[in-house]
Length: 72
Image 1 (cartoon, one colour):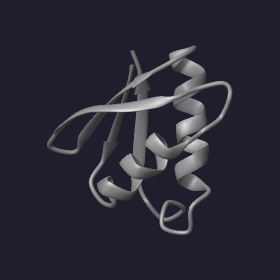
Image 2: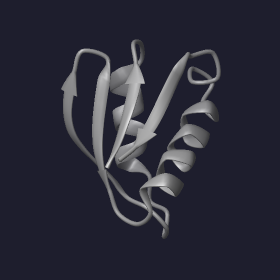
Image 3: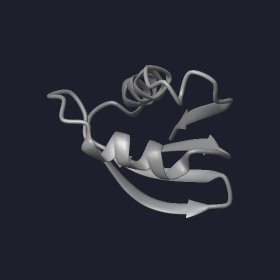
């Protein structure tokens, strides 16, 4: 499981991760509590957190956001 603390563009981040179709991970949105977005992930959660950060930062809207991702 990973938790993303993100105040803006939450809907875009959810759509981006749920549509990711890599062989290494898949992300399933579970819940939103304030600025916290929780996702169930397949595979290693630490590696999935790094990939999620890379995916978000790779978007034009994501490169200017302040957020953090915690694997649990």
